[in-house]
Picture 1: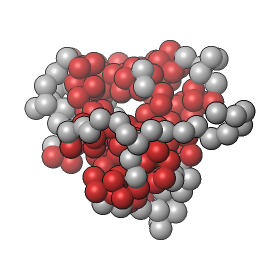
Picture 2: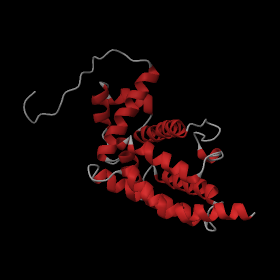
Picture 3: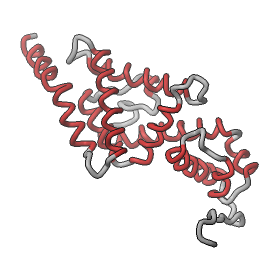
Picture 4: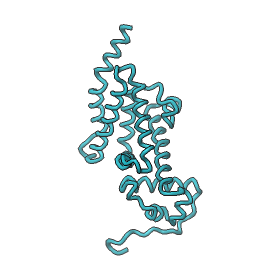
Length: 222
């Protein structure tokens, strides 16, 4: 290959079972979206990196939008599994789909800390969601409704867990989401200078410390 030329990808790779091929396509697409965003995603690039033709990719994904939805749904399931592992709980406490009931049996601060610890271990996926979340502020973006729903679910889940420590649980939930998102952007820009977990724990002291003390005092008086 000459210097500066685009990399070539073989299309004579061994055939993969359908489930493995779909996972490969999702993984490749995730990496490309994290780097370029959805609007910069080329189906030809996905096909090239998988050793397929564009029609071959579409047989598994249906369309570019269908591929985006598949990536998001896959990440939701994987994120829920990873979060359960960090918390040491089962699917009953932290279901794959929070709209099915939300987290149970875990404290709000514990849930937030586990979430940030998990995210610190997968910067490529945090970047994927950060890029898509910014892009999808435009109502015409195919993931717009997904991210509206995702934010609403996160705020509702955090607010539900915040009722014991705050007189304004929804407001606290919004502050938590804003703090998490803001710290993650700073971390993605300068990972060598920003320790995501340490910065979150420092922020958590400001968000929860006084409230948790008040809640313990109230329980003792009851």
